[in-house]
Length: 127
Length: 223
Image 1 (cartoon, rainbow over the protein chains, first blue to last red):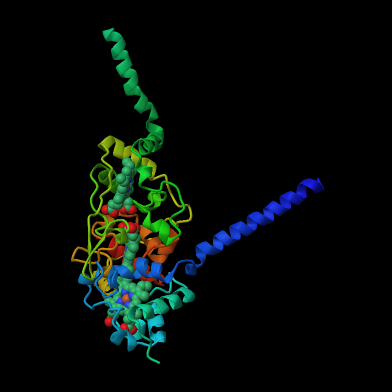
Image 2 (image 1 turned 90 degrees about the horizontal axis):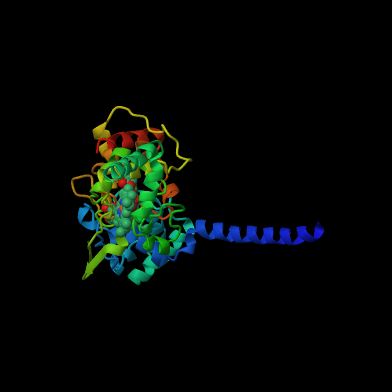
């Protein structure tokens, strides 16, 4: 009996571990790169070039921010950008047409997105 | 000989009649015969990574019985219309000129079932339910159009992504005909927690209170 139990216990542990990592990677939004998150969630409005000309843009009354514009993006602090993504445009005194992504992306993933945007504008956030 | 073929014809006619009480069993074989599963996921789970989403050819159907109204399915399966003006996964249909994106060609559903087959497939699809969805969550109430419009278009800008018949976003399903198409209990559940249905949905999850959810769904039912 003991002989059978040991390998059984070992394989059960291995399976739990495997399942654990599987679950972790499925729920950790950071498993996706910021570039991929940008594509899936932001390109619909901000466009594949990031200049604000996505397929939804013609139907918006406010133009989505041009993420490649160093001057416009340079005027926003990293905290402001983080807050706009997490809580939406309204939270930073901008349009409701910029939706809140806090329900889809965790803080770490949003921080990665802020970094990604800084790469797109080749600019630093206002201090 | 004549007599024999008549008896045969009678027996063939009898087969579907006998099968009628378990119509969804035939619906299931029609789904297999028509290769619906080549494009649609007929079993869960939904795509869990962006890489998987990009491979999606058609919407998930493994919870069709929770999502759709049966009458709508019967019509749609005979003559599909465009539900998603930007395609199933808008990212796969973008044409870019300069820095401006537009929608390229969009595929409709390939289903071209006869009225009889459509009814049987719809019966089968209606058996594919998500047991965790609460039936009766939607409470039919007064339709407060002006108030609903304020929430949907002014406060939340749902029309940034969805077309409500007056020109709206292209990256998501049209809301025109949502009332005929979708089960109101499912709409309630989806708006409350879109991620439960699709972990990688590109729709923001918002924290609506109960009254606002009822206000929104009562309005969508009229669309």
